[in-house]
Image 1 (spheres, helix red, strand yellow):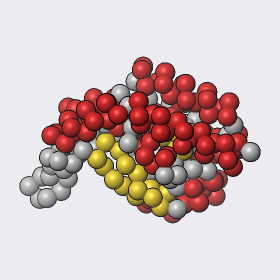
Image 2 (cartoon, rainbow, N blue to C red):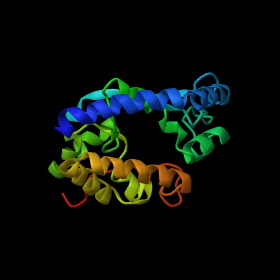
Image 3 (cartoon, rainbow, N blue to C red):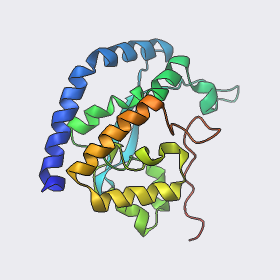
Image 4 (cartoon, rainbow, N blue to C red):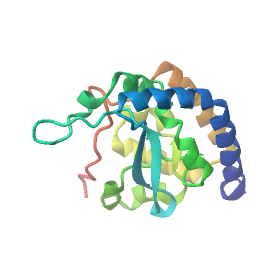
Length: 203
C-alpha cells in the first residue's frame, strides 16, 4: 500500500511544501549561479528512472564550462566555482530535484539516479535498483554517500528496494538532514566528484 500509493502522495505533498518554504534560498542561489556561470544556473542531464525510463534531472550548476586550449573541458576541480563549492557542500544543489519529484520522475527517498552510460555495466543484482523511483537521497547516501565503494552502494540500493517502508523513509530523511549539517561523505577521498563506475571486474 505504501509503495504503490501513499509514498507518491507523500512525495508530492512534501516536495510542494519544500519548494514553497525554500523558495527564498532557491531564488538567491539561482541569481548567484546565473552570475557565476554566465547565465546558466541550472544543470540538466538524462538519467534512468524507474524501469530504466530516461528523464532529465535538474540540479543547480556548480561547475562552469571553461575549456583548455584544445577545446576540452577542464577538470572538475578546475571548473568548480566558489559559489558552486558552497552549494555542493551544503547540498543546496539538490533543491531543484524537488521539481523532478513533483512531476513523478523521482521520489524523495530512493536509490540515486546515476548516469545513463552505466546501464549496460550493471549485473542482474545491480539492475534491481531501477525497480523503484530514484530518490534525492537514499539508504546509500546516509551510509557513506560518495565515500563508499560502488559495490557497497549497490548493495544498499537493492536492500532499500526490498525493505522500503514509511518508517525507513522517515529514518533516511532525518539522517540526511543530519549528514547535510555535518557535511559527511560528500565526495570520495581526494576527489571533487564521485569516482566513475567502470563495471564489475569479477564478471
